[in-house]
Length: 158
Image (cartoon, rainbow, N blue to C red; front, side, top):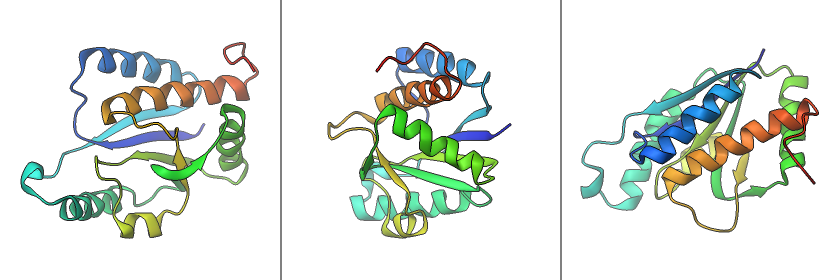
């Protein structure tokens, strides 16, 4: 069974988002070894210029992502997929032998250049802009959708 982790910075502050995350994490546990891995936020983040904040977050991400077979960055400049195409991508990881996969949600200013060059596989959820709190919930729902598609379950409708 694959180990799938969603890696992000900082705690979820919205109670309804937190409730949704718990719901989808429980659902995902039926399909894979799932974990929501929360990294601590950068200290004094509010006092840092965006490029410095992104650089410091990048250092954290690079350290945290050692040992994964596949890393997918959620980035606004990444490739957009339909739900079925995303399911095919996730399925290909298993076919290629990846047993530990990380989907990474960056900070408010995106990923540092070093993180982007280290992990070139980047996914965009939409051309719309979502809060980082909502992206967490939207992505977990999509990940759940992927597994139901792969199992042929009647959750997704074309």
